[in-house]
Length: 112
Length: 113
Image (cartoon, rainbow over all chains, first blue to last red):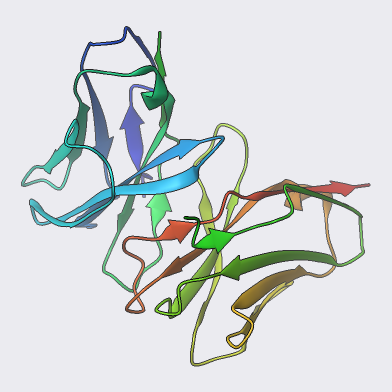
């Protein structure tokens, strides 16, 4: 069974631009979560989607948004990029709320 | 305000010995705790979890201990192997689920042959 796939693996953007990251969950997993990993803050929860609905949201500004499609694939968007948005963005999927999260390998975003 | 703290950024042990990774939390609402392992250039992988109704959970070489009164948990790896060298993250949640996890900053474990 294929794991969680995140594209692209690396991105370089300029301050003020916007970016869209993509995540394909494990087949059959309907929940997708997004996390931001930075050296200073560790992994921080961004949001979680289930059946195209956002169920949980972390403490991030409105510049960070996401969505989930009917095939459970998910995208997250960051608008008006700031230098501090440089991070590894991790997507995770799970079968249900009591099943472990399966993480993808992440998208490394660098904002210059 | 960091609700899950891993105060040791790194730990080095000899192969075959015990590795003990520690984690403290401040939010008394947390009732489910997990450990994840992360290799470079890969996403975290789930290791072991424990519910607040237990004080110990074992899975092979990995054991997690929970001390609710001290708001402290630890991961024991016995015996340690070079392949265990990775960053270990402690995580916690409310409501016994895997959603909206609060992670610590991680501890880099190095197991020397």
